[in-house]
Image (tube, rainbow, N blue to C red; front, side, top):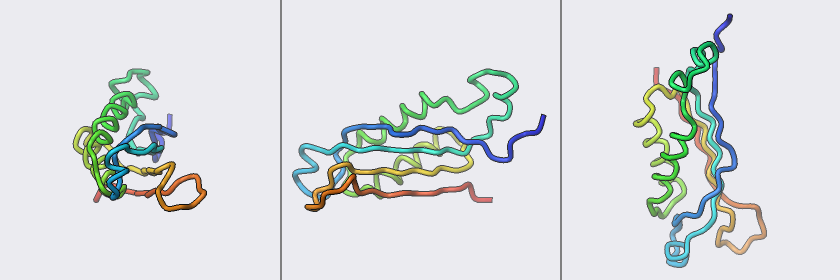
Length: 125
């Protein structure tokens, strides 16, 4: 069987309440956020073995996300960067991370679905 050139674990539409924002109101009451993750991870062995030990356990990834979003931050950029660092530290076999973090009700006086950041990281060769 051919091995996939690239394989990804996906976590989409993770919803949570967090305290990320510059304003005092956001730091006090928080806001709602949506997070999408696409994590490059070599799971060809799991395709054969059918064993969770041979892949990236997305429940464990979710635990890391929970840890990261509980930390207050001023900027979405800082919160997203912290999450990427925590994921890379906990799961060193990660090859890449695509992350989208969106604040659903940004305090900017606009009628919109949200404002956020998108990051793309790849392992250095």
